[in-house]
Length: 103
Image (tube, rainbow, N blue to C red; front, top):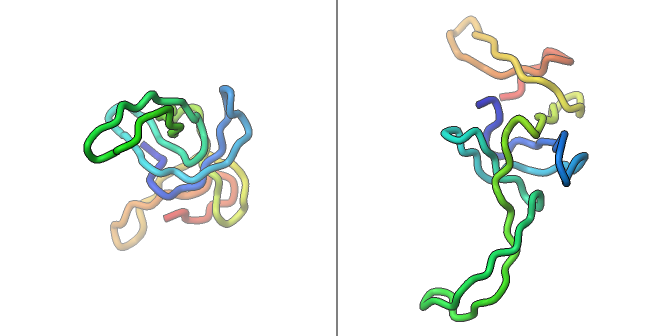
């Protein structure tokens, strides 16, 4: 998966189209990401011993990684991600628009 934790992404389709956010968690096995304040769902929570109060809580739900696009830190545009192998053998991600290294 080309999107990692703490990346800034923009949603390109769905009900939250056009919103930007920071990736809180990446789930590579199912190709999903959890983004801060995006795809908010309401969950009915029963009171437990750890959480004394129950009720309806709002939390971000996972979103498929094909619905988001990485925002380049140097050019500030949503971009596709490519991979380069540097001279020292290190594999890094780079912006396809401005050819700057993201990692």
